[in-house]
Length: 515
Image 1 (cartoon, rainbow, N blue to C red):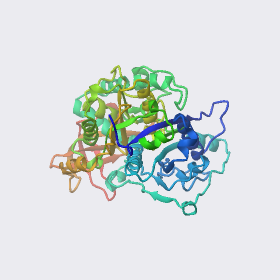
Image 2: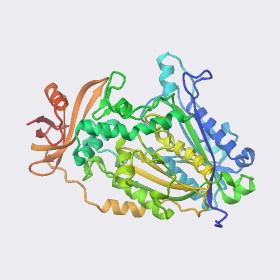
Image 3: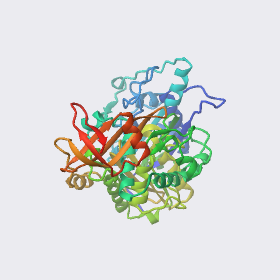
Image 4: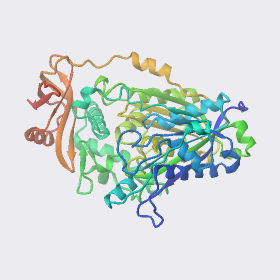
């Protein structure tokens, strides 16, 4: 197939990991990690110098610190994309800092790809990193570093684009007031809502989660870029709470939770077909985007089914439709796996795949085992997928990206088979999703009701708080919380799903007791 000269293609991918127990560990900064991965991506092109001179756009995925999720005491690169570009000797015409969320690698790829397709730039470099493991390691030893640096985009004639955080619509003030702040809390509520829909007991559902993620541990164990040395685990080991697998938030013990303590980076080089040929990049390195889509989900309390993920299903369906493919045509998948529920929703419930599908549901090993490299995780998935597809020319792979609290989903279909640039569908999907009715919230959360979903959050293994969402007998959804010892004990001893409660409104948050 002949494609236009301006068609963007992936020509280079790179990854880097720094383990604190490695003999060559030095404690690289976020910018240094990204630069290592970006250098690897340039080398992967097979024509590093020729490609680097053509890169006129660079983009970075936000670190956790840049997302406001943590504070790093060592300072940081004020213009991360430029700090990395400078290390590589690249002077870009445009530099982009993408929005927050696990969907951001696809959003950034779409932006940079569109610029190439329009003929604005011949090549682009995208990257991201996390150095949380090093930050915690050094601070625990009272060591310090100076990671502060500042580049001036105006001094090099570079257009600077900061897309902002992009938190709009992810969590309401009402959700936050009732303790839904950390991702594990929100996902636990989604997970138990799915369990309620399926009618499974706590024990049976725990084993379902274990069976889903057990194959991921084997992939992570075989991946040289995993954040730590991983030993494959059985479903029972993953799902059963123990001293080394303490509860974090019902239904999640530690081994079902994304591992954020990582030092990982990944990068992707995009070029136009014309630029790639001019740089003598071998065509066996080229990987084409065949279909892509991004969609946003409603805020948790507005979702009719808190355990579902219509945005994920819609984005995946759109990407497949654009590519003219379906799940059966894929040789490999990577589903964003911070917790089980987004994988269940996208792969199992959405596409009808089985946890033990011989193709696997991850190419990296997943966030709890390979490493939860923040917003940048799926950059690793893109890099690994590209390497796999090159080994099987003509095959197809799908990457599913998840952001927020099952708030944003992206899907991408890739192959070495030539294809026109498809762009990234969004507006049409979003209009359909937004037209669906919202859940009806009670004007006043007071009276008798039943629990539709819940979680018990823990602090260092000790039960701390119960959060419940349900329906009042008089109609309308409520949310309520309790830290009462008797209520906590009752939530732990008997399954709260479907149980009757009495809800009392408060000035800032609603309280409940079991009826």
